[in-house]
Every structure is written in structure tokens, then in C-alpha cells.
Amino acid sequence: MNTERSKELFLEAQDILPGGVDSPVRAFRAVGGHPLFIARGQGPYLYDVDGNRYIDYVLSWGPLILGHAHPRLVAALEQTLHAGTSYGAPCELEIQLARLIRQAMPGVEMVRFVNSGTEATMSALRLARAFTGRKKIIKFEGCYHGHADLLLVKAGSGVVTLGLPDSPGVTPGAVQDTLVARFNDLDSVQALFDTHPDDVAALIVEPVAGNMGVVPPAEGFLAGLREMADSWGALLIFDEVMTGFRVHPGGAQALYGVRPDLTTLGKVIGGGLPVGAYGGRREIMEMVAPAGSVYQAGTLSGNPLAMRAGIETLEALLDPGVWEGITRQAARLEAGLRAAALRLDVPVQVTRVGTMWSAFFLDQEPRDWESVRASDTKRYAAYFQEMLRRGVYLAPSQFEAGFLSTAHSAEVIDATLQASEEALQSLKTHAP
Ligand code: KE4
Image 1 (cartoon, helix red, strand yellow):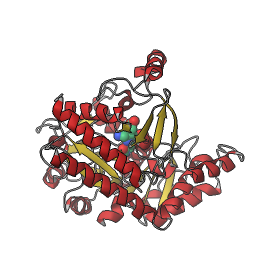
Image 2 (cartoon, rainbow, N blue to C red):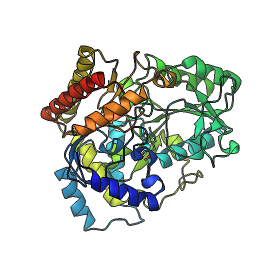
Image 3 (tube, helix red, strand yellow):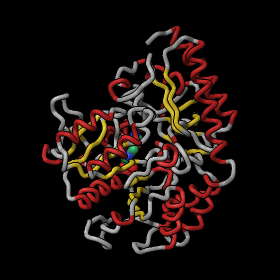
């Protein structure tokens, strides 16, 4: 496969963009080779600058649940564009999108739009601290909530329960109130509450982990977090930036029947344009300026283009049969990948919740960050390259989620399964 033009552009890009990209994971460092420069997307496909076509399972890291350049979205955005791109003033589209979110997630009684998931989680945590008057926050190993300083922590050793800075530039002060627990381990949360009984403002969790690869919550885990938050007077924040409108039309909170106090959103609610949001109980949200005193602001928050893209995307998902269709194909993909790995005797664990999925090169079912870390990342990298050669574009890291769109037809899934069979076969004959 000829990717010369991508190679040239990557060289040029590295001169002016750090690492040649605008977000680290895109640089293919976890899978080798050079990233592909994309010329366009259409339906389930990406086309690179050398004219190669790929079935896209990254879908801009989740937002494109309707696939690339969906006619309904293009038409709506064209129409909105002629009315301007941003007003810096309220517009009705903000109310419309907020109502669609509340209709899907009744626990989100009020919403504030921002421009990224990072802004959403950063703001939700500030709000939780203001509402409770407490300082500490609990996050979970392997969960990612954007790059705000207070969240860039790595789990300390068993002894150190306080987070340690996980990036240069993050000061110990910025993370001194960030505690780290283990996903799917309620005892690790209990231990933190026992140590800091009256000072935890909030627990923030990806209700289905997507940023260590897709790891579903264990039975009772989310309900256990709800109970603990209630008994210790902390808020429960579901970071549904990835899971929102991906694992269920009402998000993980609908799927698992656990209502958080605050929810953060992004990705799908912008349909591919930059949107984030945080929302939840009215009494909490009414503390957000200018209704209340918790400051947060944004130049492009609620801009008409992004709002319109979100409205069209969420409305399309409500059309009869759309959700069933996409989850049917996702189930076929999961079953097919699992069957091929079994048949070829390659240790692969396929996980899926709704329309997000992962294939771990692991012997055991993944449960938390500790278990996924045992993945054979060399084998994943080889599989990634074998699939890319066969026209299938997977997440360029074992520790990321794959996604599906309404454009991933049965034929597209069949082609993917065929490529995967050949890729796994090739791994067997040329063990990396
Ligand atoms: P953004 O600031 O990237 O819009 O959202 C941050 C964020 C917050 N919460 C969750 C659960 C997320 O998954 C994300 C962002 N996800 C990554 C994918 N692992 C975005 C891709 C990237 O960083 O390039």
C-alpha cells in the first residue's frame, strides 16, 4: 500500500506541530509506522492523501456515530452556516440541544455547554467542590477525563493514596487533593473514604471505561459508588464524554440504572464539531455563573454550528430502528472477532458495550487497569498494521476504544471480519 504522501506530510508536520499531530495518540507511536494524513471521510470510510480507503473504527474517537459527512448533517450545517458561525450571544439551538440531552438523560436537569470534554470535567469538578465545600476528588486508575491539571495523576504506590503528577508541568499542589482508586474495586474506594471521611467532594468515573480499552463495570460497581457517595456526602460524577449516546441512547446511566449527580458529555453530542457539556441536578447547576457564583466561561460555547450538529445527530439516533441497527452490527462484529480468535487459537478478549468495543491481546477477561496492562501490545501493534494493510483503520493503541456508526453496514462488518481472520492468521505465521 502506497502511503508516500502521508509520509512526506508527516515530515513537514513535525517541523511545525509537536510530534506532527494535534493530539498525541494520533502519532501512531504505540503501533509503529507513520500516521496517515486524511483527505476525506465518507460514511464508514476514511480516504488518505494517497487515495487508500479504510473502514474507520476510530470515527474521530467516538463523535461520528452517523459516520462521515452524513447527508442530513451536511445539509443542516450548510443551512446554519449561512446564518453565521458564532454569535457570542444566546441562540435557540442551545435550548434545543439541551432539551434533547435532558429527554435522554432525565437526571441532567440543567446543562452548560463548553467546547471539549476536558472543559466539561474540569468545570464539573470545580462545581462539585463548590457545592460540597470539600477539596478531595477520587478518580480511577485507567480512566481518562481530559488533560486538566488536577486529573493528570498516576496512581501512587499502594502506600501513597494521593495522586502523583503524571506530566511535567503539573505541580504537586495541583494534584494534592486527587485520590486514585481501582476501577471495579469498591474496597479501594472505601479505603479512601476511611482515610478522608469528610473531605471528598466527588467521585468521577467513566461508567464504562473506554480509555484503557473498553472495560465494562463489574456487577454492582456503579450502584456501589452511588451508595458510597450518598453515605459519605460526596457527589457522583459520570464522565459520559465517551459513553454518552454510545452505550445506550440514554448513556450508561440509563443502561445500568444508576443516576449520577453530575454528568459530563462530549463527542457524540457535537456530531464531530467541538462540543462538551456538564449537567445534572438543578440545585447544583444553579451554582454556575451567572446564576450562581461558580465561574466558568467560553468564547464559542453554544455556537450555532456545533449546536446544530449535535441536534441533528441526537435526533437521527431517535429515528425508529436506528439504535437497534447499529447495535446489531456491533454484536456481529464482536461475535465474529471472538469466533475467529477462538478458531485460530489466538488469545484475544473482545469487549463491547453498545457501539464501543475493544480487542485485547490478553488471556483473561480484562477487569481493571492492572489486568489490561498485561496486554501483548506488540501483538496488538502487529494486528493493527495487518488490518491497516487490509483497509481497516483501528485505534492506534491497545488502550483505546473502537466505535461503530450507522454507516457500518453488514457488508462493511463482513469485510472487517474477513480482514481480521487474515490478519490473525498472519500473526500466527509471523509471530511478532
Ligand atoms: P476532549 O477534551 O478530548 O474533548 O475530551 C476529554 C475526555 C474526557 N472524558 C473521556 C471519557 C474521554 O474519553 C475524553 C477524550 N478521549 C480521548 C480518547 N481516548 C480523545 C482522543 C485524544 O485524546 O486524542
